[in-house]
Amino acid sequence: MNTQTNQLHVVLGSGPLGSAVMQDLLRRGHSVRMVNRSGRRGEIPAQVEVVAADLYRPDAVREVTRGATSVYQCAQPEYTEWREKFPPLQRAIVEGVAANDARLIVAENLYMYGEVADRPMTEDLPNAAHTRKGRVRAQMSEELLAAHREGKLKVAIARASDFYGPGALESSPFGDRVIYPAMLGKAMQTLGPLDVPHTYTYIGDFGRTLAELGSREDALGQIWHVPNDRPSITNRELGTLFAEALGVAPKFSPATKPMMLLAGLFVPPIREMWEMFYEFEKPFVVDSAKAERLLGLKPTPIKQAVAETVAWFKSHPR
Image (cartoon, rainbow, N blue to C red; front, top):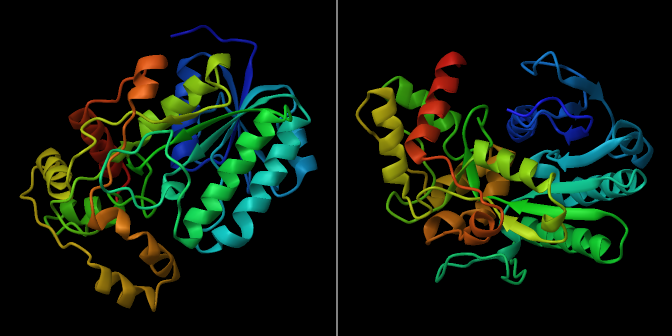
């Protein structure tokens, strides 16, 4: 591991992705500051500074990122509030980080591409979103790259598919609705058909990719897909790996689109997820050759990723 450096790296958001970025930054020997709404430390290590800030205020962002080499944008509003709150949140972060001349490394998903079922997704695809949240993502990404081109600040973007891993609970298709029931020998509540190829990103690889981008000038101004082991895995195959790691027989209870529509009448986050269900009905596969070739990043072997995820869930019983 590297010795401690004089570089300060600031992570905005202390959820599962922010925590994964923080852990990789610590392995690299950097000083790390985590920023969240409450200032609560939770399970964040003692050597990491934790501060509270309202990231919708550019002056607050400027203050908490002062002196930073790189800033990692892992914060987001509630899923039901993306259209109203996500763009102003990002604009405030851009203003605050630009004032300090730090790099801004942004975590994104794949919503902006729209439906791409006939080929693996690559970074050169146009933004063709047909959903409300996809159009929000496209707008935000275009604004980031425009800010970089205009010289306002230095930006790099990491895009990942649906993730799983330590700490990923309701935000993950392979989170609490899958692993906790499986731990009890019950059916795993997966999304969509069981045998459609789908890329699932291990959150540790997502965090490691963001940390790598924050250390490289040659990565700036570009979009990078996070490397994924077995990018064409199915729900049945990944669920079976989790069942094997838990020592139980694999049982499945797939959620269909009509079921999601019905549940959405009572649960707003599920109602918001309904328009994105196309990701699970047809092949949804990501190509990460660019990051593997140019950044030298390799994905965590999937059995190791599953084992690390299971270990976290066992240590955090519901």
